[in-house]
Amino acid sequence: MSFFEDNGPFVGELIFVFIIMSVAIALLTYTDIEVHDKYLLHIGAECYDGNDSTFCQKINEIHNCPNGGSDCILQAYWFMLQVQMFTIAGLMMFVKLGLVKLIGRKINAMRIASAFIWGAAPVILLLSAWEDYLYYVSRGQPIPSVLPWLDHSPIMQGINSLLGVSSTTTLSLYISMAAGAGSIIFLFYLNRRMYKNARLKLPV
Image (cartoon, rainbow, N blue to C red):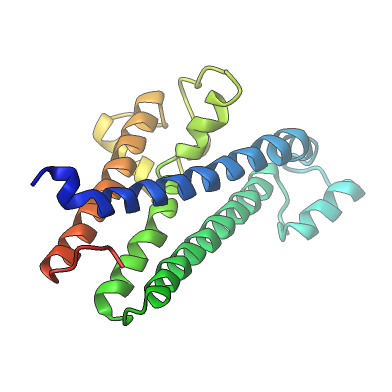
């Protein structure tokens, strides 16, 4: 029996999740281009540290930044992106478990674990900076040699430490992306093993 005959449904599952993840990341990238570039960058430049104008006081109040400063405003925006991605992750878990019930299978610990794998996939993509990569590539722009806004990421901090650099570089980004993609593939490999060990031919 060939690999695809034996694993076709599991490969199909990975492709299906990949399509959903691609749409989710594309939407976040679109949000970044439209909201971040056209509004947030300009607001951040105007409401720099120490600017107590009436406009900036209102902006700081809206973004819960009592001390002001563009960094705080940008952190509020990053939090918004995280909320969106975790919401998508929750929806993917719901879809997975919904398919299980639709086919008439019981929801057990294995299938809940599989649903968590579905939900983890888009979050891993976001945390491994795929959205930052697409932000530049989708507009045909070169990726900067240094990406300091990613320095707060624990993943990047670990990679930068291994590379011996003080700030995130293009190489750091590529390593993070490769690690993220590899992690997703490994999770779906574990997902396949769970179903195979349970003697199930379909990942539902």
